[in-house]
Structure formats: structure tokens, C-alpha cells
Length: 519
Image 1 (cartoon, helix red, strand yellow):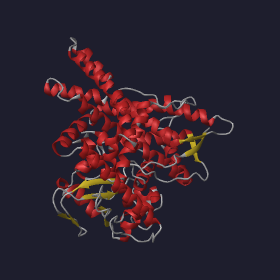
Image 2 (cartoon, helix red, strand yellow; image 1 turned 180 degrees about the horizontal axis):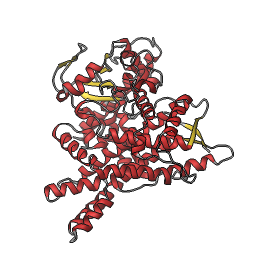
Image 3 (cartoon, helix red, strand yellow; image 1 turned 90 degrees about the horizontal axis):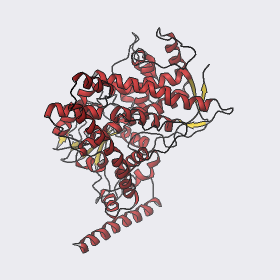
Image 4 (cartoon, one colour; image 1 turned 60 degrees about the horizontal axis):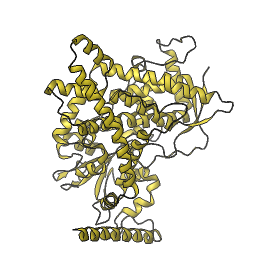
């Protein structure tokens, strides 16, 4: 058996070297050719990899919103990509049952395990039911607001105060600051634990770093043929070796808290005084603990394995950090480049009846207060239209299908929906679709216009629409209003801003800013 393994490894290596040779030769030839023998459309994609999102958008515009991609014949990289709202609604809603995530998606997103973001069918439905149950719980809403306010006052404000007090204002990476803020925040909500990533020292927290490496590895699996990353995994080299190390570090951290939560809930069940238990449950509410409690109440003893709890927590951490975190970074960049928008947000806050300064202290705003700020909400929506945190949705057809655009989808064919491109389509948003214009979201009566989720797709559409949509809006508006009201965020002149090649739409070079405290 060993000799067959060696031969297989040699075969994979030869194929990869052949592909590399072909690619080097193609680069010397006509770069305008869209499709090549053997390697298909991959060369053009690689040539435009530095601006792949805008390149994809232009391809979709040129092809009426839907296009077929053909990769090298031996890589199984063929797929259909679309930004047509009719196709999107068909895939995500009307014919939802025919378009699960699919097995290829689950392979690429292996670090997510069997969690809700990586599941289909009955497993997905049961997890969605449970998470929906928790998010409707008033204790969860209280926890979200309390955690944000606490992190603003105890974590974010001290850092912004510190850098703004320097004689020459210190340049900081706002993306790093926001990511640390959101990671602390979501760890408190999910695990009941504050890792304290957001401090003036900017410490390197091993499990947080491992979390980032896991996301990088997932994207790497998107851009290389499956046989190649599997080959690396088998030999434990390159990106797959880094992923293995990161998973070990992250899992060690997470399983420690899962065991502690199990013990906590078991101790509660043995308590004699019911009132004491109820008070403790109210004080110690977090999503992981709540999940174990519900399982024990429904089944007498938790049927969820530690592995499943690990997967559940990981998926909640990914969704809770990346969606609002990436959106906030793009928000501060766009607002920083549009001072009139910033002024309108400040005027709206100033004109609101709830504004009361307290002894000159830095002001924070409650969930109820920010939900009354229409223009701020419009600015957040406009940010997510142009820069959705999840830029692409992956599906795979179970059975053959015909899209409304007339494109035939074969059985097991992969279908990608470019959420990024949809925000840049004139057919959806008009000729000013590339402009940052919060006003497009405000009706003549002064309220927020309703846009169907198959057009504004930042939170998905259909049965898999984001359960955390409302919470994400609250978090983003609470953070945005607190920072803008108390500080001026100035983007460093000539700082290069472009999207990173990653699963989540973050900034390639971070967001370098100077902070000035408002009087």
C-alpha cells in the first residue's frame, strides 16, 4: 500500500509542476485571451488576482449578470457565478432545497466542523432552531448591549484616548483595533470569557492568532486545486501544516471552556435551592452555557458531544466577529472619505432628544438610542452594500436546474453568488451605484426604505438569511456612534486601501488612521 501512496504523491506533484510550467509560459503570451486549452480560464483569473472582486464584477456586467467559469480540466474548478437578483432569489429562496452548501464547501471550510455555517438538511435546521431560540431570549439582547458598552468604556476608549494624547498623533491600524474589539466581545457573548485582546499593549493572544490562521487556510483552499491542498495536508507542509498547528492551539483553548461550562451546568442541576440557580443563570448567561442548559432540559442530559459544542461555538465566533467587524472598518474608511456624511451623522446625534452629557465623560449610546438614528442606519446599510463582509456565497446543485436567466445548471455543479458585485450593478442600484450615498436608503417620509434581501444581500436571503442581522446592526451602530461622537477618525493620506484576498472582505493593508479627541 505504501508504494501506491508514494506513486500517488509523485503523480500529484508532477501535475502541479506541469500546471506551474504552463502558467509561466502563458504569462509570456497574449494576456488578453480569456480561455486557454487545458488550463481554461484560470490564467486570466490569476493575472487579475490582485483585483479579483472588481474583475469578477466587470465579467458579470459584460455577460448580463451571469457567467460560466471553466478551470483546468483536471481540477474540477468549473462553476457558474451570478449577480442577477432573479437568479439569486431562485437559488436562495424559490428553489432553496436544490442548492445546499454541498460537500466541496464543507471540505474547504473544514475548521468549522459540523456547525451551522457548514451544515445542510436536518442538522442545519436543528441548529438554526436552537440559535434562533437563544437570540430571541431577552437575556441575550441584554448581554449584547451590556458587553458592547463595557468594551467601549473599558477597552476601546482608553486606547483611543492614549493615541490621541500624543503630541504628534500616533498612527494606528483601525482594522486591528476593531478586530480585537469584536473578538473580545464575541468571546464574552459565546463563551462567557474575555480574552482581553483589546488593551494598550496590543498583546498577541495565541488562540486569537490561531483563529486568523484558520480563516487564511480556508481561503487558501479556495484558490488552489483540491488535490494540491490535500497533498500538502497529507505531507503536513505549507499552509496545511500551519492550519494543523492553529487547529491544535485553538481546540485546546476551546475545549477547556467547554469542559468548564459542562461542569458549571452539572453543578447547577445538583443545587437544592431553585431560586439561587435561577439568579445564577441570569447572571452567567452566555450562548454556550445556554445551549448546554437547553439540551439538558429537553433531553435530561446533554446529547451534544464536546466536538459538536466546539463546532457550534466556532461558528458563532466566526459569525459574531467577522460580519460586524469587517463592516465597521469599511464604514470608518468611507465616512472618513466623506466628511459631509460624518457631519450629518453628528448632527443627527446632536439633534436627538436622548443626548445628555454627563460630567464631561465620553458618551456611549444604548441600543434603543441608536435604533432611532435613521441616517446612521442608512450609512451602515450603504457600507454593507458596497462592502459586504461575506463577498461570495457558495452553493452546489443537487439536481439539474434552469436559472431564470436561462443558464442550465448541471447536477452537482457549483454555483457562486457574488454579493460584492451585486452592490455595483447599475441594473440594481442605478448609475450612481459606485457612489457612497446613504440618502438612497431614506424614504421621502424620513424612514428607511425596504430593499428586498435578494438585492441587498449582505445578510443573505431565504431560509438561510442571517439570524444575527438585527444584533449586527445594533453592534455596528453602537460602536460607530460612540467613536464618531467622541473622536475624529482621520484616514492617513495616501494610505492604500483595497480588499484582501480572504473569505471575509477585510482590508489588505489595514486601515491606518490618526485619532483626535473631540472637545
